[in-house]
Image (cartoon, rainbow over all chains, first blue to last red):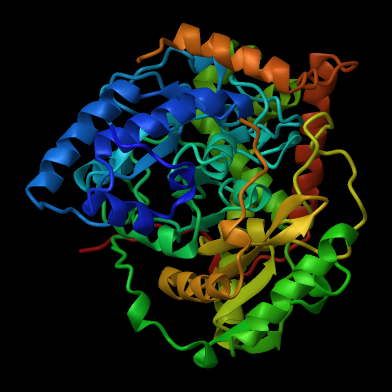
Length: 472
Length: 66
């Protein structure tokens, strides 16, 4: 058996794929090494929901047979990955991170898993998550069947939610990439907190067939990776039309880094306060430095104002209306009381009292949000802002505990989600020894250009290559 | 080696305990208090949203397509 050097666990997709094709090691050896690491290190961060070692090894041997015949299937062939435990994997438990669903089993694979399977990616694990993706408004990081998601950079800090396992697992080198979901922040937040590059695709670009529904009109699936390029490679394979998903946009995505507009043709909007004194004090220097790097790419920077809307209230009301309907039977049955977080239990129960008039009003205001973002993108191509205004929360504190004072309004995460827009979060430095992220938000189906600017940013910086100081 | 979910749960729980004790769920509030608090938050959200004027262009519609 070939020795798998430790650096391999932090390689990008392209690097790993090149080594597999060069036969530096077999896919079987690589998969085995990742599985060993996953089972050893994953639980340290409460990142692992279920090991899929047996099936992974079988598929890895298939990939080896293909590579032996020089049959290649693209960049993801032989790459070990994990999925948030809200995606169905045939005949395996799919817990949605919640005790009442601990024994739930589906007899099919989620659409994205089928697509990744076809190109030879190796699914090695289901990864932990906040119970029911936190739709009931959770108050503690411990709101999960597997315990609080712990951050590989500092285990006293949260790995973010609700894709807490995908965030921690990629950061810890347990998988090369992971598929997470975002209703309002669940890909971007763990990416920022764990020092990863995360991509939230345009609503409808990636099929959600086989994924737990939390909010039909807000849910998206997307990758958490080590780099912008990796996000492009994964999105290339998982995006596309699926008639089984009523929200499918009927679009495909071709990752084409060579055919993007030059940075000098791009206008980036920003709100000055975000890069002056708007973020948490410890994070301000890193955000200012990241802004200067973006500026150095040659883009035109333009001051903008985010449209004024009650974003948080809108997202909360829309999730309440839709999740209340989706989980109505679960809530009425009383099984909801088995969840870990009392705040979330109460939030889910309260959803059943939401008048339809309030949901409809929120959806009507949402159409104004969408129009306002459309107008915003007449004046710029993308918007730059801190992903979160500071580093990861402390696990031991309630998530709604008041943090350091900030002047920034935020709103890019809920606003972008309400409008169904794509965004990428890029690692951009550290505060208190913890990673920070900046986000680029674009118009619908603008993923290639977001990835291109992200890639240029990462050619000028090495934040995305930093590794957590892990013991053992 | 395949490990069962039961074995895995043991590993996970041990890992969690070693990492740090997770915070206990918010205590001191009964379920009813939490529920009333959640309902109150919803009412507040509704009041905030109600301040946004709504033009006719926002009315929900259903379109028949040939």
